[in-house]
Image (cartoon, rainbow, N blue to C red; front, side):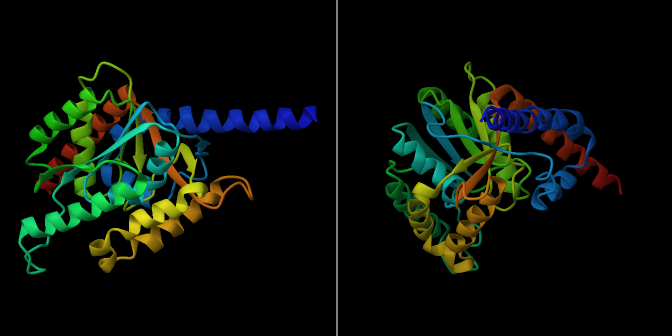
Length: 293
């Protein structure tokens, strides 16, 4: 019996050391010397999973949780389970959608405003399924061009709601709007005087997981949230693919521990701000290098 306790404690301690400390050290040492694209490819390929073992965490994730979604449906794909668990744990939760989600409207024969409102309504339905109030829609068409105003608005929400846990797409996700969302969040957090836990969630690529959330008890809620996005699901069945991804993540825990899980890369505010600044500098350096070729 004592041997079992020692073994379990060793495994838990090893997970903590590798998942919560050594990988952050790896990022600090390496990110400024590595091309940004290589980090994105490593994330998509799940390159770090053999070396980084995620630590299971539970809701509530903070007294006030905020999901920052670049587009309508990102909030459900990346952390719908965590949102549902936060609500069940009686923690405050809210959603901000940064972009209007209407790129490609002309090809569809729609007005930009019409497509944006269609997608906003789907996000409202999904939020109601999770037991949340309507998301806050910033409605920007170009996140890079509108970054200063988006930063100002996001800072106001962070401050007024005393947010202490933020969920945002994993910064090495290759989608440009997802990277832009991290730049906006980084600048919005810079003048927040308290610590904020930042969780990078998965949308178009895998994250490098140092924490994991079991979502078995809310997988039906997450599936219903995903099914609200009728427009997006016509292009790709996100309900099916996301459920499959969450099933796949169960492999990261012991056999029989769970059937569905969401993975995140968690950092405290100060380390997150430093990381995003390094990524921004790496991206600028990559752009300068391409211009010289």
